[in-house]
Length: 230
Image (cartoon, rainbow, N blue to C red; front, side):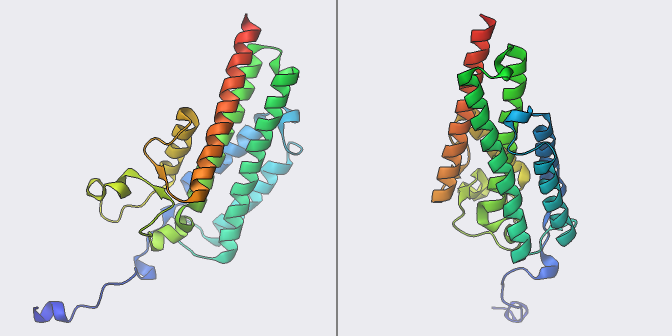
């Protein structure tokens, strides 16, 4: 071994100055989009009055931005709890809207009076579930974005193609929000894993739940719309 290499410091975890977190704006944009979709829903499909969920979600998002502005790289128990609370509220609202829409379709609610109204409402609910589950995957996988910025575990909960085939990935690759959004979108349209494999039990159950929710929305909405048109 040469003297230069012998004097090199041992490799270790990245120093705080070397950590480059993920940009906050894609995640924040998804939250704002989900809040907007909530405002577009009919009153009987919302979990709470029109201003409640967007206000709660907006306050939680502002708390995250204030606590870790710019890029997501600060590991904090409080910020982690706020992040989980935010995606929990989004997911709860999306599932509630799905249940209420299903009930309206079965019992002939006002949204089912016309095919156009039904398709618009069903599309809004479906898009809300895609965003909610994408944010859920984003927050729960590998401890969240801040934890992923510091260290990627060798056994992740969700295995992306770049992890299954490292020769296809760039050095230091890690999943970003766009990867989780793609996962949420494809899982909601294919009703099964496409290129991302769930490894952890929670990941399998969450993807299964999203597939069932999406299948329920699309199947009932399309069937009811065809019935109204004919």
